[in-house]
Image 1: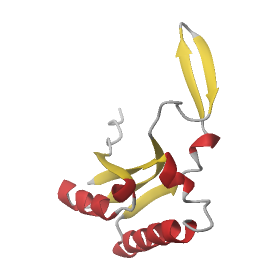
Image 2: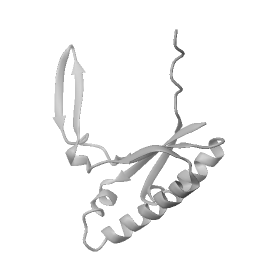
Image 3: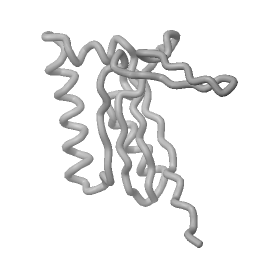
Length: 120
């Protein structure tokens, strides 16, 4: 079964990526986690995301498009990245989520991947 591990990080945690003092520990934790995932063979796909300030949000209200630069202004957590993993069940997906660096300073959401619709 496939699950998406969705990594939510605080603004402060994401700022560690660029900090000369904190970046090595931040990236070291993620690199170790990614290496373990990779070596286990469970990764189907995944990506990290650029910092939230690079985001653009689009909303349609009454048929009119509204574009906003940056993340939602009141967001306390931001989507930092994701992996799709293929594992036997939810318990195994939760074990992988628990090992994620984002669970220590944010959270990791686990969701089953919706299978494609049947073809006619």
